[in-house]
Length: 376
Image (cartoon, rainbow, N blue to C red; front, side):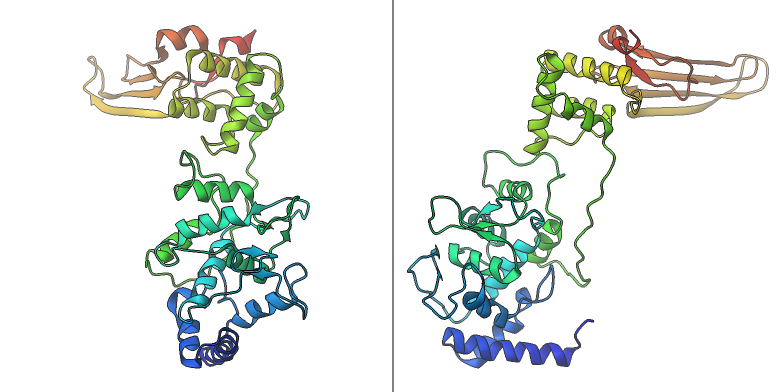
């Protein structure tokens, strides 16, 4: 049930009283933080100040449980006391909470998660200029209040492992400049990434956010190619490089074999890698029952009227598709003229003409390609 304005106001006032007492500031200043627009929660309800306070006392790992604090500004088991400025502390924690919410929580408790110190640097870049500095302790504090899994890494130290998706965090950190390269594909983009980025840029956000449900799209060629990793041949080598590229968001997922050719056009592989790709597609088509031949993208199409050749007028159609290597074309032509009806298709690329063939038994308009090796 969505709280009404009266309930929301009462909750903010209760939080303000608790926060003022906890941080040693006055009620009016605390209430101003509770009401601040950036603290209202873009990826969920506004985080409760009382819940934040309770986490420091009652959390199973970082909670003091009546003894000395286990969490300070510098992190876990740190003797650094909290340093509150009394004006933006709650707002900062609310923003950190939203940033953590955009990641998918680890459902497997055995998954290590992401180092809190790495997350704190990502938060600083992502939330800037609203929150240009984030301490390790506040990052851990927000994660604990959210209910994310926390774990101390082997060897101890002030950093904890936070239970969010490592792949999604890698994507976000590289997008904000913490890495040598930016992601070239979005399959690991956090579900709340675009919404939170828009909100921080002062774009109007009025609807409630619901975490997207992951869609398990069929990816038969990807699944097959991943299974080839470790083979001692060119297909195994290609599969290893492809798998690394997917993990690092260097390129998209090749759900079908056509996608591998699209990836090649985007990353400009060496001739040897391209040839290995053709070999892999040929084996896929030849051996896998779920395989399908290649259909490349249309790049140009034209249809015009023709006065005919003494009989009635008609039309002429000509369509140009990319060839598999991208340097030539697949041409499809139709002369729809009474008394002169011709339909044709051909590969206008010497390289592809030698490596690819049209699949038998398909109409001109329904043409598809397969490597010559697939027919062996």
